[in-house]
Length: 213
Image (tube, rainbow, N blue to C red; front, side):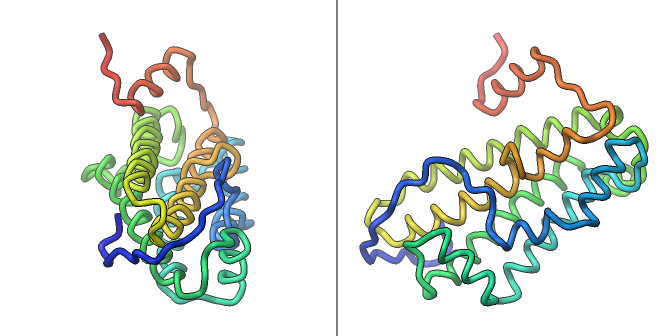
């Protein structure tokens, strides 16, 4: 999974039942007044930026935090949330975190193709204009999380990387797709947001890689 060499030291892993809400590192980025204000304005039709642009900015901020070193609050949050991690594991955790964030950003940029500058100016009627693109991001970020989980399953249970990647994947997938606090959830606050039952079924099939008959 990681580009770094695999650490084969044995480690005992508790089982995590659900995706976490997000560690301090994430909540500082998403749950800030500027972003919440922008979301409220979008829902009220007072468009300042597209959600696409806000997503890119937030991911860039997350990458910056993960590459700027470990602070005491971040270390405290990580070691409390993932009790099998130790200080010596944090560099590999952060490297994995950055790699997945870069992949998520790349997905976003690829889907926008060469239209990024134009799209970012189309902030009015954001959902109505860009619904297909938002759905495509939804599908691909969910697929990415599924792939990271599949890669994690291939790591031997008693290898330290299993625990490190467990924490990194759970945190990044919560950051992106958690139904209560992830980046995708804020898409639902856009004015005019609507997804039909048929569209939801199609989206689920696309995430699963099921082709229409």
